[in-house]
Image 1: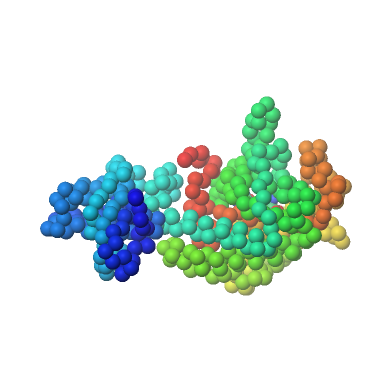
Image 2 (image 1 turned 180 degrees about the vertical axis):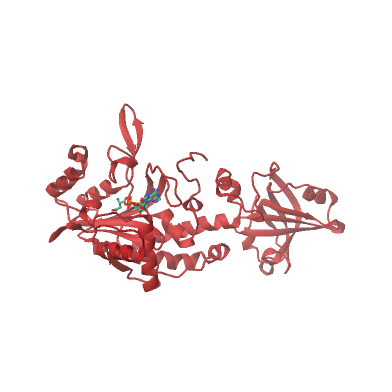
Length: 439
Ligand code: ATP
Ligand code: AMO
């Protein structure tokens, strides 16, 4: 047996004379002459292995002293309570098995004493993950996705998957990655948008997907990736306000679950989370423009999109007023929302599209969708797109498409804003950006 216990599972009072085997990486070897400590680290924490010179087989002691940091070992021994050791115990070894010796020097420091640049860390992500802080981020991400799945499943959503190799754009033509699909041109999908809508015609009623989206964003920013993880829903017989409720309730639930299940990781990251209060404030687009014009040097006209500075100004304004970081912007001009967003029947220059914002950035977009095929074709054309390319999609609207609504929220932005990381790349194991294609 290479391992019987994780470091954090060992409880001396429960074990008695029972031998245990821990396995992991050599975090540190401290040789004080008369006594030698080897600290072995696994995903859950650290075990101290103690070898007293007078009481230890000289060969075993020699083997321990020679261990190279970050090598992989499996160590069997008996457990003794020890208040000064990590997790409150020490292991008196009978056997040390060296499973894989690490080269030295290491590509980067793992002790946390020297803070490496993000680029260095990403180049050697495998080593970076051996730092407690990095692992903590991905434990939180796991809890986020687990909570999302749980919440949506409990609210009647069915998990689906859509193709990532597609023939059309959905979110505007410029940000597509073209690929070769046998002898045809194809693209990496920007969003499950068209497919989740088709599923509404199929009668699946409420669906969700957690999957990759690809955007050929030209810029190099702290909050854009070229490959991101999108959490998408679509729901029939719903309007935009119905799915906004699903979104805010889900985000609050995710925060609750992370607090409940990832408190250790939050402590490692020094993050104190507060569950966002629902309902989130609804700011209309008109109000948003006023806030920007009254509080910044920018002068926005009605119909302008909200840029980064504008988003920040609105975020600060809402935060000052409510003490909350999350809010919605609703009632956008139809012209600056995607073709599939439903215009208000009584005032079609405004759409039933919305954004869900965090104080620092956009987290999600959504809308009630157009379910009338003639109107959809008109909107596709008015955005300069060719309806012929959308035939596979439009077909689903001609034989019984219910009214429906949905949204997409970026998983990385959700985790990033939750943990307050500086850069979105911090919360992606292997980010894809303008410069980075490996690892
Ligand atoms: P959408 O395409 O639906 O706006 P998004 O998540 O890419 O989704 P953001 O990029 O956060 O949206 O867009 C918010 C605003 O930030 C945009 O309206 C734009 O003006 C601005 N923005 C977008 N990309 C950049 C960038 N690379 N550098 C600076 N500002 C940007
Ligand atoms: P949108 O284009 O706003 O909407 O994308 C939804 C959310 O996905 C995340 N996101 C990104 N995160 C990191 N890097 C990127 N390059 C990136 N692009 C998008 C953001 C964003 O808010 N089809 C619609 C959704 C819908 O209406 O259902 C859509 O894709 O958090």
